[in-house]
Length: 421
Image (cartoon, rainbow, N blue to C red):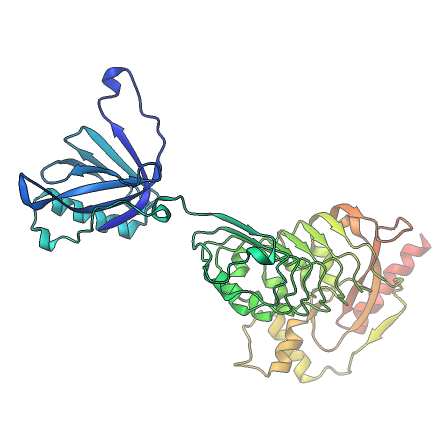
């Protein structure tokens, strides 16, 4: 029986000598096995504790030698074993809770003198270096010659950077690192992301700066990244559009989209209520989506986009009189928030519903509307705004949609009255 965890051995006699323990634990390998001696030819169960400093380890007798088990926090991977001789407390922490429970059960049996044949014993020998080293949390690989081809990545990794390695795809070995919180694959040649990245349930930062990405998978937007991803860097790629479901990544705080070929931002970008930093400089944006006005940012950079001059008189009319039954039903689905998907409605209708807009009156517009663009002061959504152009402007055109001719006329009347003032 073996257990890997952090161990602190505390001498209970120290306080009587006016001393106290250092309070520092070390990574260790604990083993329960037999150690033959003259007094017990058949072998007595011992506890062997090996650390990086002492890989040969220290042995402690277990039979009739455990005074007490402290297991209040065993579910948190913590426990203490109090020995009679020597008078020490063996404090265990950072252990797998199920492995710790099994280890303590074996220690109890050894203490009671159970038949050694019924105990899950291990050989008591020096520990390997990798068994007593602290789990590696962070790894950076910055050249192709350092990239591991035969060995695997440490499963304990929380931060992994693989840059300048000319990767053309994401290594599937990375996708088995379930503790990964930060994945940096910047400065490679990756063209496509596997949907299994969405299985990294702890991933909070994904950095894909300077690759050859041409798309961002719709499946990633519906994965566990919805509840974990906070920082996403897609700058310097070949992206032209982002999927409609992109705004399901509602934990995003920082989004970098600079130097792509984006023709538009996601229609429902205003649903990213936690977004505070947005950078989409040097793209091909001509107008911002209507929901952009709902954002609440700290920093915004849209420099270097070919924004058009907003003119409310220039409009696109896609209204039909009277409204078709399909439009009426689609508006009802959106306004009543009726669940829908390819299993219940045709796929092309799902696409239309995903791109539905809201009129100023609050009603939905799906496939029948009047569209125009108005000038919008970006300081209304962001505390700090990088200038939109070299002329010092901080305004950009934002789309507006109207569900009926009446709503559009009311808006235009309001514009005329403001101009007269």
